[in-house]
Amino acid sequence: MKKYLDNERGSGVILTIFSFAIVGIMLILVLNIAMVFTKKEQASIAAEHASIAATSVVYEKIDSVVKHHVKKVLIGIDEDGVEIFKYEPLIDKVRDRESAIKASNPWLSNNETYIKAVNDVLSKEIPDDEDLPAKISAAIDSAKYSIPSVIRNTIAENSGEVTDFDWNFLYDENRIEVIAKTKFEAVNHDGIQFGGESDIPQRGKGPVISFIEVSGW
Image 1 (spheres, helix red, strand yellow):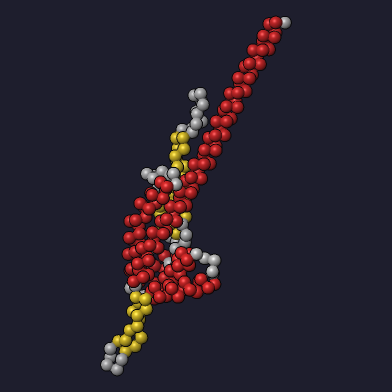
Image 2 (cartoon, helix red, strand yellow; image 1 turned 90 degrees about the horizontal axis):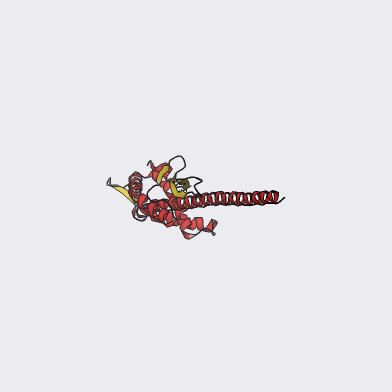
């Protein structure tokens, strides 16, 4: 009888230890799954913010063109054969469009209103202004050189991998895409491998830059 009880007691101890081991393994699995989702969310936020920041660079470069470009329009020839021109500052057209947008969409922020006005005006003016497309292309080319550092800084601020990212312009969508990554290192338990170190990539897309479609860039 004593031997039987000792065996029962021993089996109970083994079962208890086994149960704790299973619980421990399950907890590690749950922890790893939670960490994967957390890292994925970090990468997604980093990519999204970086794509918006990259898009902002384009508008910053375009802003100089908007403020300084003046369209020269031939309106006639005088009796001496001298051509008569009128001059149309681009910024005036943008401001007029801003006022119209604000009147019909008062809930938009000033920045949103300005960006929409710029897109609307440039989309209309670029095909009809022989000097404007070259200036727009030069501004966008300038933005291309600044975008990588802006993306890198934005990803760093959002806990992403600053040494391993990619970006490109989606011509079919007229927007900038950023691929950001976060590093995931699996938690292991008592020699049991639940995984190693890996990168988790996520994509983010910035707002549509509609005037790009007619810019020829």
